Image (cartoon, rainbow, N blue to C red):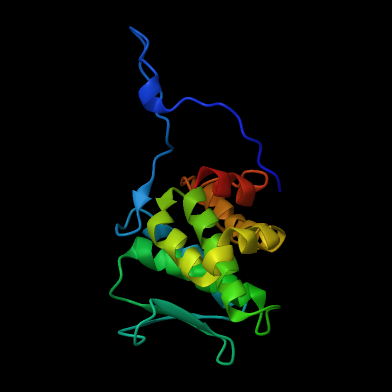
Length: 193
């Protein structure tokens, strides 16, 4: 992946045209704290069941928001979190489940991959997980976080594609806005971050 430098204008360097309604420059985003996307939990939980990782809601996990236990073939979510927060955590844990019990590479590498996946999928459905995702990726990836993401872009895009396909089915079945997967969703999301 390569990035080219080019000249751009920052919003403050532009003027609104007279008698023209300005177009929104950012797509609509909802905070991870709300419940606007609670309807997406149902198809993702059904998908988790299909792949053999049923979702269980628990009071507490002793720190983590959720976890995927490969040995038990289960995903656990802390039920006190808001539905949008549970959705972001479930996407992260489903990415772990899709990686399988023995993902390639070190644990930190896989945390970068699954959180990058969660960032892309939540962004595609209109949730803004960037405050937590960026710091999580930075913490696990260390000084080479972006290099680690670039090195795994194909795997991240494949995982994001699988999860977005589940949500696109919701879009087709229920006519609910679940988001659309852009070509090279990983690259587009990384450039936008």
